[in-house]
Amino acid sequence: MPGLARSEVARVRIVVSGRVQGVFFRDACREVARAERLAGWVRNRGDGAVEVELEGPQSAIDRVVAWCHDGPPRARVEHVDVTPIPAVGERAFRIR
Image (cartoon, rainbow, N blue to C red; front, side):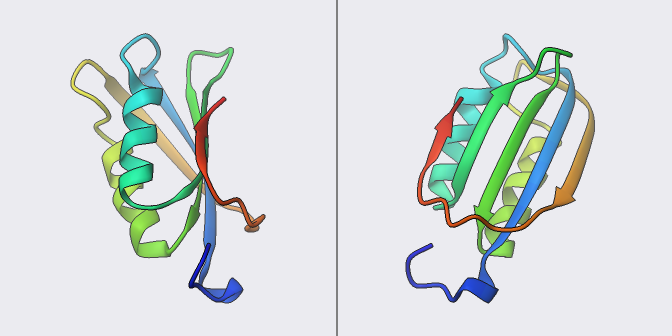
């Protein structure tokens, strides 16, 4: 992330389960992550969950994780699992 020392950059993998596919979760997540200036990606998984990787300042990651507990209006989030992982130096956020 530009302007941050490597040691200040965090990365997490998030798996969100419930009614999270077909409710614009990925698109809304992309907008929230970009608003927080985070890098990473979001994708639908075959098991019905949505998987997200976020990279950037921990405070911004925390705000997006909090958003993931509710998601967009039509989502019904049942569980959010967050796992810290090593940062990889990604610079943009995209839907996979």
